[in-house]
Every structure is written in structure tokens, then in C-alpha cells.
Image (cartoon, rainbow, N blue to C red):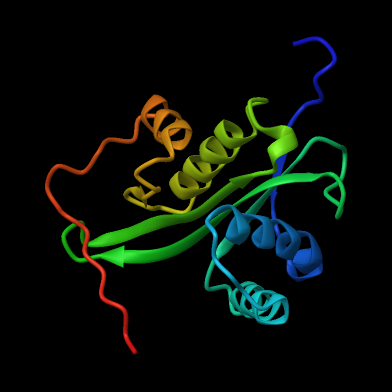
Length: 158
């Protein structure tokens, strides 16, 4: 581990839109989603400004800036009728290719769980692609369990 920089995580603010947007573009590209960069930036800016989400930024330098940010997690706090309380949906978790394997994803997951606990959430929910075995391994090692109770469905709205 000698020579590795410490990974720090903090909540993004309105001033971090450029950093978050750069990482978001990489995330969308990773999943093969075509997007309009202006629309993506607008979407994130609105979510952060309205406090609809929490964005956690990971970096390997003293301050998060456009170049040092190496990952992010985007969480949507919501509620669960069955739990009768708040739950968090960890919607995005992304680490830049150059920082993969250094513990950035694990650090972001742990920061998310810590923030959820402080925020009074009863659980954190997430999903990932069937073929994203690295993410599945990470989530399992951090105590997430495959939901055997519910099957997820989706229907696009035209």
C-alpha cells in the first residue's frame, strides 16, 4: 500500500457541478447511454440545487477539483411503505478507470452507508447490471444481499 494516496469523500455542493458532471458523463458512457451534455449538466444541477439527491465525491488529493475527483455516488433519499421509514437508493456508483482497484468504490459505499445511518435511513437499496460482477462482488462484501423477496420490473413511459 506504500505510495497510495488516502481516499477522501465529501458531499458535493452547487460549486461542484463541473466535477460531478464530468464523472456523470463517464458513468453514462460506461453504460452505453447516449446523452446530451448540456441536458446531463442541467439534470445534475437541478437535483443538487433542489436537494433531491446526495452526491458523494471521492478524491485522492486534499481537495476535490475537476482533475482529482476519481469517483462519485449518487443517492436518492425516499421512503418505504413496508419499512414505514426513510430508505436510500444508491442509484449511481462510478469510479474512473485509472482509480479502479484502489478501494475508491468501497470507500464510497461505506461513506454512503455511514451517511444513511446518520440520516436515519432504515436501509440502502441498489441495483447493478447483471454482468457487472466486480460491482456485485463489492456489494456482497459490504453486506448487501440479493433481494429474494421482490422481482424488479420496469416499463418505459412514452
